[in-house]
Image 1 (tube, rainbow, N blue to C red):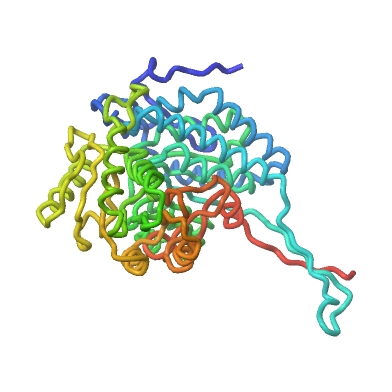
Image 2: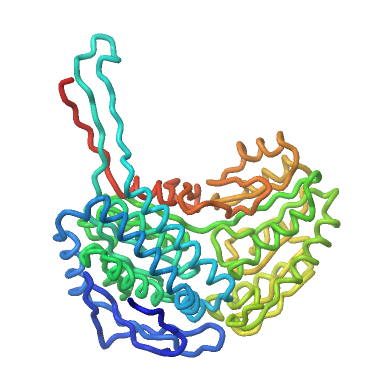
Length: 482
């Protein structure tokens, strides 16, 4: 039996990239540093164009995918290994991202769910039968459908959930029998490399997965452009995502991009619940989630009461050493990211906003920050502010709230806090977002439920295990005499 490794005892370490199961090295390396103190977490080689070609050829030449039962067993073994090594993965996430331990442990738990749901879906058949004699004068035939895996998927993942976002690309692909070339964020690649080794150990055929980093032009963009790639699945910023659409060519694209999620608090709402949701939605994962609460729209009659409860609740989110189990907020991904948000707070204050809590920065760490009276045209609320900022904006009524919520380039997710069923239904129907959660944070979902946005948040293609598997396959129709 392989025993868990205390990753903190062997760092810093040189990590390999994997091309079809083989560890590859290079003189050109990428450094990964701990945002908390700048210490070296590890190094990773950047692959060459020749090595990228080897990965593509291996994936295309891998032959028949494992059977449904084999895919199920690979995924369940991976889930079990991940559970055994939960502390190792949680600490490695912390040492790449600066997130606190309660967040990294939660992420490892979520990734286990992804593998569980994918394993279940690996055993299912998504097929249909149509009887032709249902049509007037229809012949004695039946039409059948079956799903066939794509030939090759390129997956590009972000820094903010370096395990779970990778799991959401790889687990559905394994369940569907599709080979993947994975390019994780250059800020957090080590977790992806570690998970890749775990999947090989779980029995995944090596040719079905290669994981690597490299130069943007010669590796990432070359991969996206390659006509042998059938699907590019990308999670990350809106700018890079839109750029991919201009170079990808004739292939499937699944883009999960930025967000600017509103949480609407109506005058009939349970304000204690609203304060909890605002705090959790704004500050979990250091606010670095595409579904995090980025605008809190509060009906004027309850503005003062809600604000007082929110500030009191948010004071429980202590900032500190990410390794301390009591810490609620660690760092952002790096100091430049924290500086951007610090500047946006300053600009909002100059325009008349008031900081009610937090606002101080220390290196890559930014305190949970509540800002009142934020102008509707402030950069903080018009752009995606990827961190622990919570701007409060008063609204006159539900009409005003919906109009303001929809006045955004983004359309990923939203939440509304109300006990009025009619108002809740209106919000569900009229908010222009991929998800609307009533009396819950905008980001609420299951790992198997559909997830994705509209407008600058994505092309409307959904992720989540079930939808991802559908997009990673094609439907073949055939008919037989019957």
